[in-house]
Length: 290
Ligand code: ZN
Image (cartoon, rainbow, N blue to C red; front, side, top):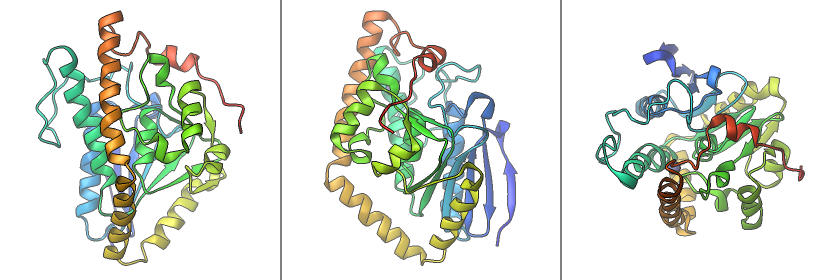
């Protein structure tokens, strides 16, 4: 069994293998694991490594510190949307592209493209969620096959406040029924773990101090199943979701999403409608539906 704990560039993502389980940890706790491109590419590299390692049967994605993820980086000192990276898809570099092309090319690569790629990893994945799981954080939890969450966790997609119809990976109507999805989007409020569990978004809700153990316990039990059987089962469910319109819905909404970014830029000169992380955080409240 491989036992190692590697730290890579600036430690934005940690990679560790425990027995048959790879633990991939977002590691920007000082920014509540806000995802900049550096982190996104480091996650992609960690997932590739886990998929390629025959010793790894299950992959757990988690966040260091108090929160799973506050979402995409829209304001930390490490925000890097103007930087070029070696891309994972065949999309051309977004940097220095004019108008709407800049974000369209970038988000095809780092958001829609990478999330779909991660959803299709040929090994079972479990998101281990504590604290905040907001907007871009939802995308990371939703691409995983299972979600185990702590009682203190909460979920929100508040980007309608920016005039944008949800985050780039539009799985809302597959994660929630349509009426609850509309409430989730229209109000942008925090949905506590208990309600997200009732809605079928989560597999387990456990005490905060039991989160890691319970997640690893489930991962360990899955790891006893045959690799190919797990992969084929995952493919079966994912393909069924796509036949129910998940992929086509995402393509359609990605167009609406980019119409909203472009509209914002035309009207206000800002693709996010003038909201930064602080303004978004101060507008958050918890839904009364728990
Ligand atoms: Zn966007």
